[in-house]
Structure formats: C-alpha cells, structure tokens
Image (cartoon, rainbow, N blue to C red):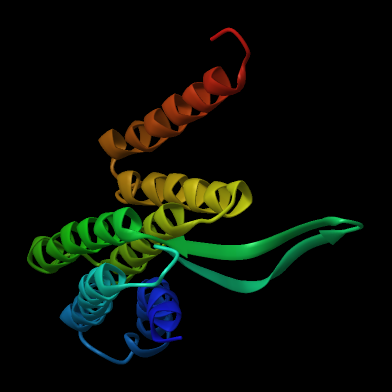
Length: 190
C-alpha cells in the first residue's frame, strides 16, 4: 500500500504548496512563498525518486494503479479518477519534478522584487501539479484534465506581466497554437 500512497503524495505536494501560500504568505515576507513552493516541489521530487526505487523492486504486475474516486457512473459506464505508475511514469515524474524544482529555486531570486511574488509561485506549483497529473493519468478524461491544467497554467505564467504592453500578446499566442493543434489532431485526415 505504501507505493500507492506515495503516488498520491507526489501529486498532492504541488497542491499543498499553493494552499499554504494562499493562506499564510499574506502575513509573511515575499521569499517565504518561494520557499514554501520550492519545498513542495522538492518533496515531490524526493517522492518521485523513491517511487522509482519501489517500482524497480516492485509490484508483480509491473505497475501501480490507484483509484481515488468514481468520477462518472452512468449505467454500465464507470470512469474513475485513476492514476497509474510504472517505471516510465516514475522516471517522467522525477524529470518533471526535478526540472520544476530547479525552476522554482531559480525563480526565488529572479522574482524577488516582483509585487506579485506569491501569485507567481502559486501558478508555478499548479503547473507542476497539472504536469504530474498529465503524466500519471490512467484514463483519457484524467489525462484531459491534466492537459487543460497545463494549458491554463501556461497561459497564466506566460501572461504573468499582463500590465506591461509587450506582455499582453504573449499569453494568447500559446493558447491559439495549442487550440489549433488540438483541433487539427482531432480532425480526420489531418
């Protein structure tokens, strides 16, 4: 049962970071939000490394399946909020959280004078959580939620300096490109 809980822990860490930042940092100084967000990313990274080790020693099936809750239940159609981890998933989760941790650490210094410091780290943690959900999804609906989460967070991060004239157009370009590529891939014959 420990590897299944570890998978949930890895996904929960980047969600706990924004929750703590939104509730605590109004009373604390600016770098604290970056430290909390980086700690959440670091814990997820350590959990991902441990997940690799546990999967290498591993379950007989070669993968883990975690059923969190039933999402859609209509007649015989049952779609759950399910996660799956195998060695490839664990390696990708380690890569995503490792690079995410480095970005978090760099951003503490880069964003230190920004007035919306906390907001940036909330967006960054949510982006990391969406990426992890995308990687660990066990069905297409959960994968779609992760995909859309990555898109929303990309939009928020790219357009972070929305008050600057040259920052406004930047946020809409990836959204348009992603929408057109999603539409093209869903269109037969493209």
